[in-house]
Image (cartoon, rainbow, N blue to C red):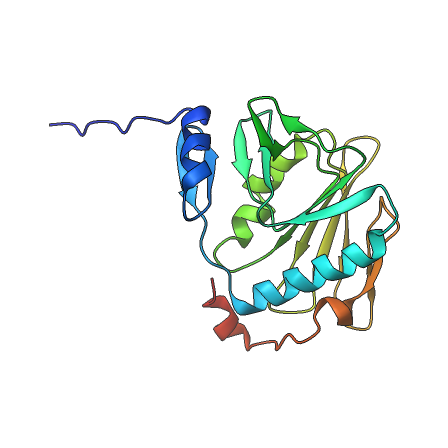
Length: 199
């Protein structure tokens, strides 16, 4: 006897569930995916970046939003909650959902053991289809390491790595520079074996 296939949700049904849900979920191809809680280290790094970026973007046309800002990827219908989103100019939202942003300039994800493969591969490929997106930043929580991908005029994504507390991390498409020591302030780096066990 074959199993009864699970009915897929529509985007409208997902959005209705998400409006009253206690915990956030991402959505793709008719399925909801609950978001796991982040580690203390993850939150320190994310909060430091949000604070430092907001200071540097004051008075500009760019602003930051963090984890609660939903983004819709029009090309695939994926709904996600990036760790940090930067929008420059007027924000634009999905016609079917005025809470889902569609024109991020920069997306930043703080990596964890459970999500880093997804963030580096499948999710990145999805983000590449957002026409407004110019930079994709991956930030390690386990060591001083930031990978900055920038969309080139020919569509290729160029990579620059920042991997020392003595360096200054910079964005490529907006004027913002942050010492790596400030990004990782108050972070205690754990032995590699322990870090791999964190969410």
